[in-house]
Length: 531
Image (cartoon, rainbow, N blue to C red; front, side, top):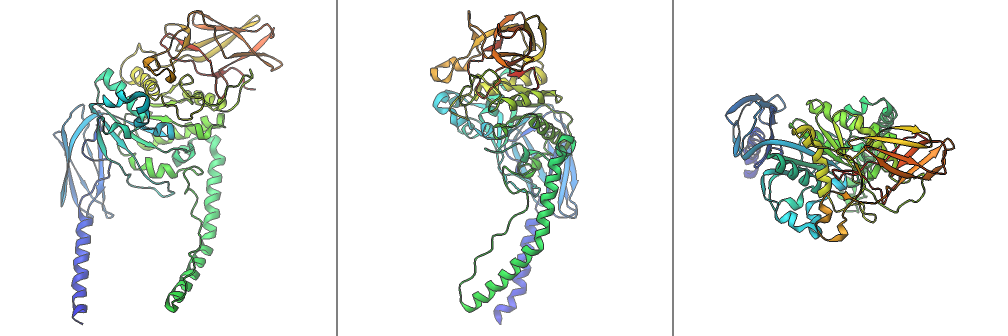
């Protein structure tokens, strides 16, 4: 009886402690020591506190207030800062939180599948010195972790770190080399937020807002709606089965008998990392959308490698949807075209493997404020995860340097197909980003075990262009002779008297493709036909 007398007091103490915990002001993990704040944009700060609590915010001489709503959630906004380092973000209500060593710079979101997730530490065998010299206190790193879930999440796992040899091995290699290139060229502090997941398709990264923007994907939305409706229709029976099991389990437990196994109940649509839409977005992107960024980097496509134009539609949905929820306009979005991989195809028509999805990636350049790094010369035929992430990061950085950091004279890309013109028995092809001119190039490979692979391609004096094919109205493809003429390439074949179309490097592994501009950047694969 004496124990029972204390129960109300114990419960009261527990409730009081629980309320105190709930009353404390809390922040999501994207706010933490060593964090990077996006320069030139107001900073949204949000979290939880007791309902009705007044929360004060201070950073760099600026202050703001926020009031927690009935659900305890609050959000405030601090004025934009142009620069600053060693700052403190102070957040106070019942308790005070001080975030130290805050720096102002440019924050880039890095997302995609395993080649974006590939860590800098994975390059140690070929480029250990790149890690040993990674002392850049004005580069900050944050690696996101979070579930694949059909339910919107409010936070991610992760912590900010200063870029140094002990922290950089665990971050995206592509993102790190991108950040380093920009920081070294501009001295602007750069933050990298890595949110990538190996083996994922593009679909689970797309949000509902983006899906609705693309009419070509209406059928996909209908599939999602049907899957959800079908699942909801099963819920009553699932509930009945669960109740029957619970009753049987209670009786078995009382009788000391063996408890029946828990029935396997199917989860709702959107619980897989590959097969449904929205779920990775919910767990790894949605919790970040209030945090201002400079732009996004995207390296994905291997898991969608059998697609063609449908991948362009999905890129429209991905980019448009992210831009819609970030509410920063058409922020820069730079992506990586798939590398050369697998066995070389000696059939002139090509079209095998990743050929079509590479062209779909190129078509995505029609989306405003996008850029694409071409890497068909630095892949590895036997490894879907090529180790040379340094040149991938550098090539992405060229787009940002040219578009966002004022280097207007910098050529951001290798040659991109522009147009063709039939001239008698030949076709003249012209390009964007020819730069100082076109060349037959050659690129150092990782197998050389020296510094050659880190350098841009060099001119192959006396070399001949490879991987061009040409066809007439009969749609029969033949390997072609291709000759550089100024900023164009003239393509012909004695077997095609009246040509109508050209293809270049249009195969899964276009081994030997060697059209470059004189900046050392490779031309993208292309096709002039739509057969």
